[in-house]
Image (tube, helix red, strand yellow):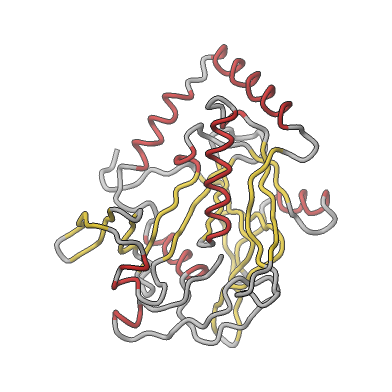
Length: 299
């Protein structure tokens, strides 16, 4: 295994509730009120839709508001990794990730382990440039049980809700999280900060039409079938944990470019969109301090 390279769950496509659009010669993030499932292939017009996308839209009357999924792992932290993250907005290179106690930071002398005071107490995070950033890997369909679609978010609502749901479902299922029939569900809310504009975030529930008790019985049945077939879930999670810990930063520089463009924009005057979460302007930058300035988005 190559040292320094984080081995992440294999990705077949992306799940998003927004996109990057070009306006007045600038590429800017625009939020949406529905899920979009895309492939890993990008054209000049953006990411190409995955075949799942059209299927779910037809089933749900034109807008995908829920996606049936399963999880790869029983450990919530393997399915959903969330840290405070700071990127170089010019190169897309990860600079610092932390959990509120400790962080790994890129420096001229290499990667250093330092205390992490969280964005509120960190001088590098001035202006909200360091944000909570989460990645959720889920399985859609039955074609590839070890392949996944990744949902990325910097929204407090999505991160807090997904983290809670994963912990709760793991607890009540007897550590059979990977066997539960679940779905991602889009929810909306309004806050004083949004001035009545809906804020959309992602929730995790049992599938529509399935009672919780039936979902738990199904998870138990699937777990027994897998064990009888020799499926070693414990070994799978050990391998996944080792792969993720093999690198200091999960996102590569190429992926970082996409993340920065969608979640860490620097352009001033980003227009407000229906369903948009961030109603702030992002500062243009020249110095490093200015590059690290920006207002926290809710998505």
